[in-house]
Length: 245
Image: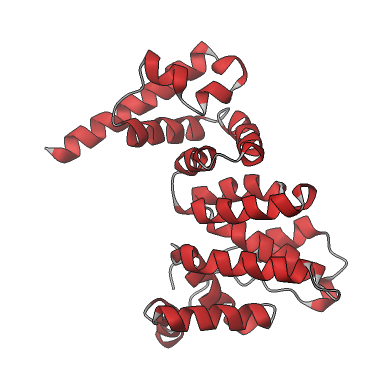
C-alpha cells in the first residue's frame, strides 16, 4: 500500500499509559508506509467501496471497541477519505464519553487526535463543538488540524474554511497558527496559491485589505511578506492559465 492518503497504526496499548500525550499522539499519527501484500492492500481499501451504511456500522463498531489495533489501517483510511461521515461520529462519541461516569481519558485524547488527523473543514467543525464543552482541553486541536491539513491538501485553504465558520474562538487559534506558519517560504507559497483559488486572481490592494487571514496578522503583515505571497500567487495564476491553454 502506498503512502498517499494512507492509514496509521495508532491505537493505544495499555502498557504505554505513562507516556505523555504528546509522545503518544506523535507515535500514533505516523503514517504506515511499510509494504503489504496485495491481498491485505485490497482488504484495507475495500472499506472505501462499502456502502455508507456499512461504513457507518464499521465506524461505530471501531469506536465502541476503543480502536482495536487490527482495524487501524481501515479506520484511518476511511477517516481521511470519508471525513464528512466519520468525523461527526467520532465527535458524538467523544461527547458521550465525556458524559460517562467511567469515561476513558485515553479514548477521548486519541479520538480527538483522530479528528484533527483528517485535517479538513469537517475536523474544524467537530473541534469547534468540542471547544464549546472544554476550550482548555480541545483548543489545541485547531492547530493540530491545520498542521495535518498539509498532509492531504493546501493548509491555507483549510485556514480560510476555519475563519469562514464564524466561530471567534476557532478564528483566534487559527490566526495564531497562521501568524507562525507564514514565516516559512513553503507556507507563503501555499497561502499565495490558496488566495488564487479563493479569489480567482492575484490579490490586489482591495483583496489584501479585506482578506480574513491578512487582516488578522499583526500590522496586516510586513510589506516583504505581502510581496512574497503576491509573487507566489502570480506564479500559481500563471500555471493555472497555462494549464487552461
